[in-house]
Each structure stands twice: as structure tokens, then as C-alpha cells.
Length: 194
Image 1 (tube, rainbow, N blue to C red):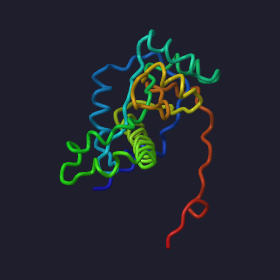
Image 2: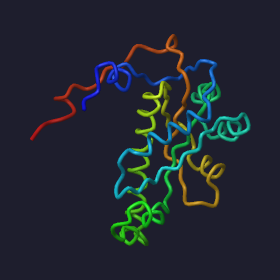
Image 3: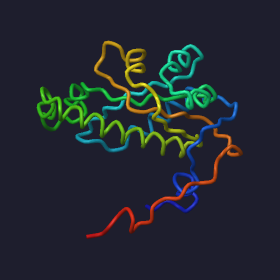
Image 4: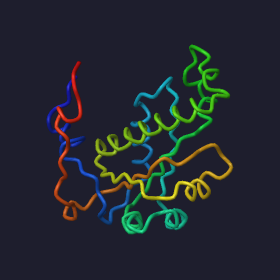
């Protein structure tokens, strides 16, 4: 079933990356609903390596801010939620449950290069699914690099095999503060059919 034009506009054509936020909170129930939607996006061998931290409280934001580059501090403070999208480099331990029809755990155990690329690739995909799911649920998103991964990992994932990938500010964007939309490459500049 193809989505209608209005839905496509909401998810892609009219959706924008937000840096300014309305003073409107995001309920925990909506964040749970967001996860419950985004988790259905495909990953290699159903590996589902993304691990998410929804940073909402003032105390949690204070722990995150020292890792931010200066230009990302104010927008992170203003956002109702900042999601740390991370990847679990021990994701393969869940494969007997998530991909039970074969011994997929054996594909990864002891193969650090395959673990690292699979975790990073698929957690990145899951972060993208989270952005689309947020838009589908009426939230705006502002994905960001521009932070010190090592500081975030030490603060939020110390003693684990989980490593931060990127951040997403979530909430209700202030459309009056948007810049004009930047262009995108044409099909013939970015793709070809063979």
C-alpha cells in the first residue's frame, strides 16, 4: 500500500531538521510508543544493535552538555529530549533469541571487525528509523554529530560494550526559526539505474 501525499510530505518533503524548540514537553508514553514503532525497521539478521538513552531530566542534560561542541549546547538545552543513539558491540549475544532459526551468534563471536561494522551500520539505520517514526508521531527531530563520543561513552555507558553513534534532539520544533531549506542532489547526480 502506498502512503498518500500528505503522509509523504510529513515524513520527508516537508519535514525539517530543527534546532529551535517550543517549550512543550514530550511524555514518556510517547517515547515508549516511538521505540515500539521504530524497532520494526529491518536490521542485518534482526541484530537490533541500537541502544537508546532518552536524556530528559535536568541532571541528565548536565551530564551530557560537557561532551557537546559549543554550537550544540543551547539547542540541546532547549530540546525537551536528546536521544543518544548508540550501538551495543555485544549485540550478537541476543541473536539466539532475535534470529533463532540458525546459529547467527557464531557468525560474530570473536570477529571484532564484523561486530564493529554490523553494530555501527545497523544502529545508524535504527537511528534513521527513529527519526522517521518521530515524524510519524508528530515530533520533530534534530540529528547531530558535534560531540565528544568518548565523553558520552564514559558518562552514559561506562563499563559496557555500548558506544555512542549520534544524537537526536526531539520535541516540537519552532518553525519560525527555520532557515530556508537547502537543496538536494538531483537523481542523476546521486543515483543511476543499471
